[in-house]
Image 1 (cartoon, rainbow, N blue to C red):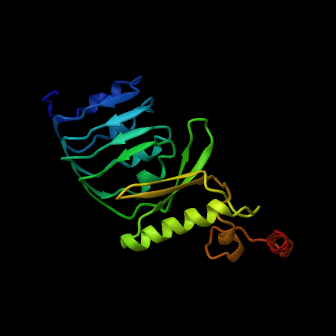
Image 2: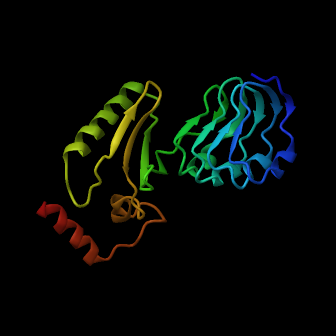
Image 3: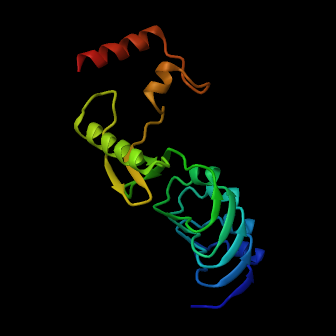
Length: 206
């Protein structure tokens, strides 16, 4: 265990070939410098846990699409919204933000990759009512786990802890068929009458 203290120097941005950054278990303070987020080859491991860092997580962290491990937990007092940064981390396999003062709800679905490169969508259950969340999680696992239909995705796997529950699904580039069929959002695709009729036919024929 080192005893480094003070700010993380912006000169760290000159380490152009740096792939992993381990600075945990020190007494580093102030904010996370933008230069850390802009490290071009930082694609594997970022551990700044167990320091006394404050302030926001740089938005540019969300651009590290292949970063696999991020640990900003314990003793840090990072604050403000984390939503934009989280949604950009499509390759993350381990993310620990505990014991901070971060705000905003976690997104209900996060894109990611399996080790074989397959794109996936991770649906996160974050209902504040733990009993209702548990029922919703179990119901989705049970129903999607036993139903096969050309218009429904199958569960690849699921995991559950006391704090988070995740269902892993195949990634659908056009998002939800329900969203586009009902067209409740501006971003939805306008389905033609023929598209809608084909959808109804496929549903009834299964």
